Length: 43
Image (cartoon, rainbow, N blue to C red; front, side):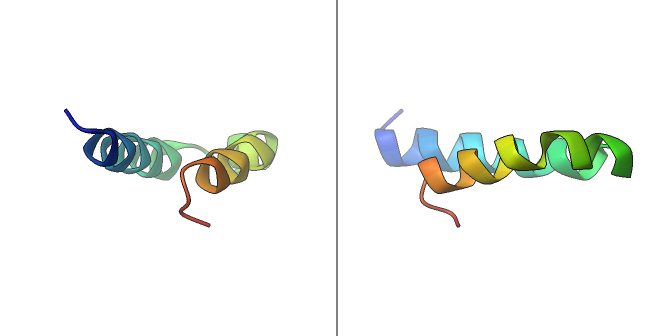
């Protein structure tokens, strides 16, 4: 797996996991989710 493929895989996994979270949980993890998106260049 190339770096770009790995980055894409991780971002898709994060997005799928994000959709499964309860609204209360999203509030708690929002800063971490946004930081991950910035780190992988998706924000």
